[in-house]
Image (cartoon, rainbow, N blue to C red; front, side, top):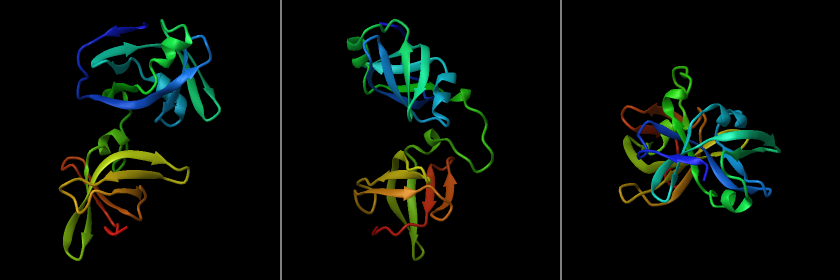
Length: 183
């Protein structure tokens, strides 16, 4: 296959996309990019993926935007069966490749796993941890999954907008939101 084997994933890698399936019969794959704009995913190299418990490098030798998504041809992947075998893989890149952000801005990878709290009367209530993100077109949405430590084990979808977002503290690993724990 068209990749080289590397060491285990270092902590300084971030997920930037996911391979969602094969495209055509010549080894192209559909790539769901988490970057804005979507084609920026191709400016980050090398791509690292975990296959059968081992971290490996993939290289796209051609790509194009198609509809709302992107497709890519990966070096050494030349038929549909090889491409289909990559479905579901998360594409990671070195975090140091990202541009510096303005104060108060965050990349999604920085929020992943942070504990999310809401204030009820003068008490902080743990709603859960950030388990993912959704893009709705209007605004991004935090997916917050409850745990055994939180008020309940529900999954909550909290709009990532100033109205609900009170404080993000990546150093402390916490986000404070204005969100009714019953909702």
